[in-house]
Length: 300
Ligand code: SAM
Image 1 (tube, rainbow, N blue to C red):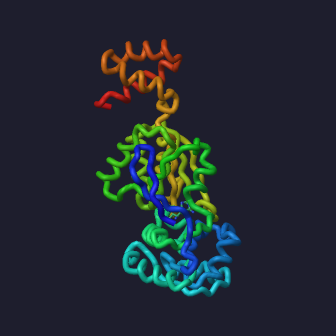
Image 2: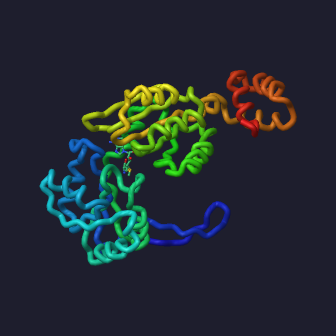
Image 3: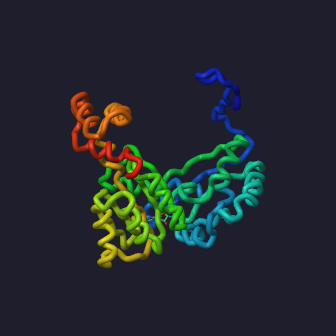
């Protein structure tokens, strides 16, 4: 159902209430294992066996999964290079009342994987879009990181070009939330070294290799020590990687009010005087506030 409603500032906004087209098929967005087939959920198996068609990122890859579970549902490729062409065809299938399951090679579709266009268009047409929740390298890594995961920023893959990658990292330098990245094996060592240069060697980090698989490996330490683990050959540059980096620690330490006060005072006073005043007024740590004051300086 689509309606109109006024928002807080009095603007008309479109309101959509989940009310599906009963004649259309359903689109199931199905998470599949990121390595360990034991992580395939019972519901994922059932849905893949029951739907009329599976839209798969790589049909050969998904064929192996289906064979393992004795599922014979027909497939159609749906990936980054054909999604514009194939989306219309899949919408027609749904329009005929047939059910489709969307899967990627591993984990949850749309998490650094195809799926966005089909899901968006299906939603616009009022098709029931149903998540079949399950594994993702993102949630698997966060769940064992030992780094606060209440608030985090998922960056997915950094840009492949060196200059763009550095700019992307620099834009995150002051981010206080936990940072999560995916990275390819041939770039992981360079990316970690760049992270240590931009975020500082002392930042806590965790490197996950081959999660849920036979050669699962977790490396915890400072960014410097994780880079050293590569240099020493302790971590092979093979397999799949997730990197989690602690947010900017001194920002986490200060409260937002102290931070606001400090930034105002720095416009009028030298850093040491501004910090003195904020310590007096808020009782926050002098060291943390001083580091924060330094981080505000444009030349840092
Ligand atoms: N959709 C997937 C998900 O939900 O996690 C991610 C797909 S993305 C194309 C593939 C990247 O995810 C890999 O390059 C790696 O960074 C990460 N990844 C996937 N499986 C992993 C695993 N078992 N261990 C570590 N990282 C993994």
